[in-house]
Length: 570
Image 1 (cartoon, one colour):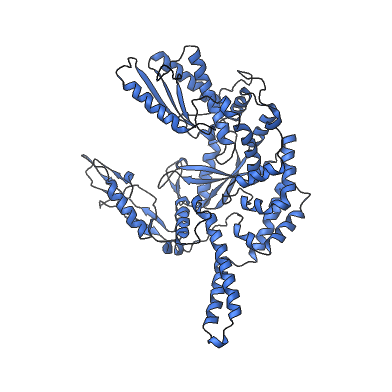
Image 2: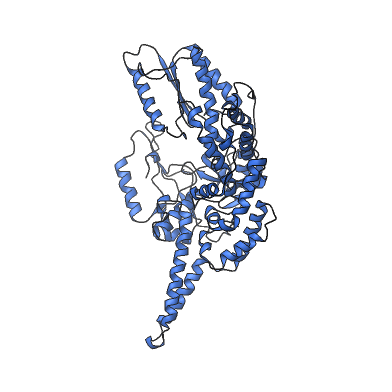
């Protein structure tokens, strides 16, 4: 059902694959995935033209996955047959893990929710903000336990309606039926909000109701993100949640440990403070904070405290004073409590059937209150980037398009092929491995000083990015606690702009080498600028005239940059 599911001399037929995918989709089925070898059939011609394909698979509909949500498919070893045996483990009676607290948007529609919420918060007004959120979450969980789940409430009302409609017409209570109908409609609205919060499809946010599409989208997403096993360093398969979590924790601890060998000189090439303080370091007013909250996605997953953007919007009238005090304290004193920086790492698979920790993309779920602070700093930072970031970088910069570099790359390759081009040229494509996770904090601070940012603003940025505490979410359950020594977080509003500043240091060094005639460049025409590199966020292409001296220089520049920044090419 995918082109990459066949390996052999003859490529897969894309038209037939599309037809099969349409047929499966129209029937309401989807692939249950697998663990084990990628291919399920081979022609066993291992000496000449071997062919491997994934022909065998298990398809299921929404009803099956609702009844057996933990169905796991295993591809067993292929021994005597040319097909791989498939083992299906339903595991429908396994005990559910206790999931972490997450605020449900439909709670806001409960009549008795807001008073409990507000009173709980006001009673803790003298306590720190992170303590207030913790006590509030405890009180909400106590309130939630007294309420029946939505599906049970719906079943109860439907049973009452059926009892009424089974009575003779002269004994039916039509007023009660009207009330039951209104309550049923209200519960369906809450149920739709419940599923819309989980579907994570932006174009359906205010569109469809709770249809089978939602059910199928949620099940697909849950199955795709569910981790059933992982391979340890010895290649053994680990299946328990605790052991899986320990493997990921060890992996991320090693990745976030600093291995700095050559620290950047903080005074080297630093510019005097040139960026105005009035806006860059001014505290936020009430309207700016509210605008930041409104800009955030309402259904985005919350951080470790479990309180999402929808809660902050609804609770703004009675929590705004505490938020204002926290933000003002942060901007004036530079104080940020470590609990506000705690982060959950959710793991999104990069490919089908991931087996190793590096096959997952770590997304950081930060607390909303932290994102307010980080986003405010990001807004102050990004407005200065177009003036300071080299033109070769086109990602995350206002007024620039990443397609510009794509077109330039094609034109340069075309120029190399022209008969008029007499000089040998080179093109180096470099992909930085785990670029966000490896960046050294001192290198980032050096990049901010180079661009002339005020020391207090740099201190505020450092407060946000330094020594966060992480836990890893495995199938909805939080595991472990560890601190990082380097890196910036996927999911933090500051991270893209800080990384652009860091990678800009490489462009500056290449430009300095070019100005000293140590490095050659490419020009596409008499009125075109000189081009030595093109950057696409963490991917870069370096061009030039090919000779041993230039190649050695570029290698030295890259090694020096990587040793100071913590980066490592793939």
